[in-house]
Length: 393
Image (spheres, rainbow, N blue to C red):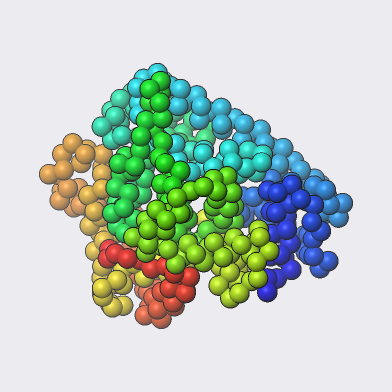
C-alpha cells in the first residue's frame, strides 16, 4: 500500500498526463508539494495536475507553483528554439548529429513545459570535433568541460552535452551493446545531417539511461513518466526485440519491475512489495539521486571480483591512475599524443599534492567509508529489483 502522499502525487501525475481531475486523498499533505516538485524537477506536472482542484490552488502560497510554471514554460520554449537553432547550424555545416533523451521526449508530453530539461544531449562524431570547435563559438557557445563520453558547451539558454558516445566506456555492460551509438543510427532523410535511431533502440537507450542512474545514485519521477509516455505514444513497438536486447544487458528483470510500478501508478494495478519499494526509493531520491547512494554504488562497483580490502585498493589506484579516456578529459593533449599518458599521471599526482590536499582527504574519507556491510547492503537492494554491475572496474 502506498502512502497518502505518494498516492496524491501519483494522482496529480495522472491528472496532468491524462487530462483527468481525480480527487486527492483526504489526508494529503499539500504543504510538501512545492519542495517535492523542486526536488524532482516536476513542478509544472504537479501544477497542471492540481489546477482544477480548489484546495490545491489555495495551498499554493504566494502562487509559487504558478509563477514557477510560468517561468519554466518560457524557458521550455526558449530551449526548444535553441536546440533547433543549433541543429540548423549543424545541418548547414554538415555536422552529423543525433538528438537524445530530453529534447526528444519533451515533445511527447501534453505540454512541453511539463518535461523540465536542464541541458540538451546530442551525439556527434569524434572525427568532427575539430570542425565543431571552430563552429560552436560562432554560435555563441563557450566550452565548459569534457568527460569520458561528453563534451559540454554552454549557450546563454542552456548547456549542450555533445556526446562522443551515448554511454560512458566504463559502463562496460551497456557499452558492449551500444558502442559509441552510431551503429544504431541512420540518416533521417537526405536533406539533413540529423540521424535517428529506430523507436525500439531509442526506447532501449532511454531505459538503459534510467537503469544507469538508478544503480549509480538514484532516479527521479520524470525518468518514469518518460518511459510511460514513450510506451503510450508508440504502442506497436517490437517488444520481442526490446526484451531480447534488455536481457542481453541483464536489464529485463528490472524492466519488468519498472513496468509493474508504472502499472500501479497509471493503470490502477494492485501494488505489491516491489512497486512499493521502487516508489518509496524514487520519492526519496530526487531527480539526481543522492550522495549516499553514489558512495554505496562506488563501493559495490569496486568490490566486483574482490573483497572489501581489494575494493579500497582498486578505488585508490583507479583515482590515482585514471584511465586514458578520463585523463584525456583533463589533459586534451593526450588525444593527439597518448604516449604522454605516464607523464601526465605523474604531473597530476604532483599537482594534487601541491594544490589539492583537500581532495586527498576527501578520497581517504570516501574509501574509509567502504565496508563489507555497505557493499552487501547495496548489492541486496539492487538485486531485489533486478540490477547489478555486470563488469569489474
